[in-house]
Length: 403
Image (cartoon, rainbow, N blue to C red):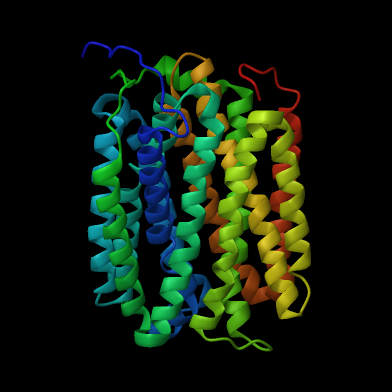
């Protein structure tokens, strides 16, 4: 066991270390979501190219998120021994290399296998990011820093769809995935060059006692469930959006349809803003409001006017990233107050997050096939209602930190 490092003050906003850290983790979040959801904007094209159904094409997204979710259960505890920065760097390097192979996949089965492996490779980054922020950022800026990281994931989600959709119009799905691979490599270089080394990390052996704490705390259990239901609703809507915009009466090509993902910029701003509001008013006040905004957006998408559909997606995106940006930072804060297990708790949160994405994102294809958009909206709306109930229940759970 190594000697614990001397505790030093965390990076504060405005300092060079904070700027390097926030830029590196913004790039990390961008790379994670860009590569993880690289096929989402291409689902109609993949269905045509490989002669598979909408629900089968959605498996290219679900396998990646499922692989990531399962690997998170190992990556989080492993980071307690190996260190945060090393795991994050190798994770994004491996994922970028696999992204190149995805663009060269010779058949559908190979593409699916590579997507599953890519999800596993990506796990080292999100499993560690929140614990790293908890250790390296000054305590009065935790929620703000978490919001900036989640903002990067929002920009990554938007960028992957825009790049993939635009390049698919120019050269097909292989060109689209190749463009995402280049983006992943660029983000990996930024992370390697800019991410500050850990100063407050102490290597520990993950214990059953710590695992028990993060699996028994009612607040953490509620936050895990919030991750699954909120993300499930979000991915269900966006998985089906490509098919909706490609069908009558819109009949948009992949390039034009991908422009709808510009609304992810609003999600980026929303997560950062929600983090600042949570620092001021408390997390318990912000999360339920985010749920209500998400529900409002889903309801607006039920209209048939394209402009209002886009508005609905924008409102839903703002609400979702407010919920996720605050909840994801709440988990390590709650675990830290219980004397450890921050990486394990963050990994469990993200395991639930990506499990919800895999299960409910896959169900969206079936909902679209059988009930068209009203079926997708009903699925997503029900999931967000569960999220809201959980968020309100958290208000009655005794607090260990300011929340």
